[in-house]
Length: 100
Image (cartoon, rainbow, N blue to C red; front, side, top):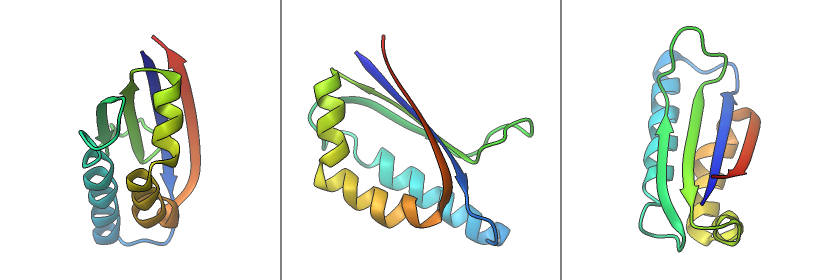
């Protein structure tokens, strides 16, 4: 199995209300991919970190294989969520992929 973990920091300048809405959209969009992408076994988005956190959103996902992860990256459903709900609002992205 392959783990795919992403940490995002959101852009500055959003109101608290907008941040809540943006985080909810990211969570709903990404978790909504469950069952729609071959090889995607689990997907979970965390938007409410502890005060000690220095990022705003975390994606924790599990794939059958590295090939399944590569397929996810270009799958139209994932690209639509990334382009519509994630990229417009994020300032930075860190990723770690590893075999479990």
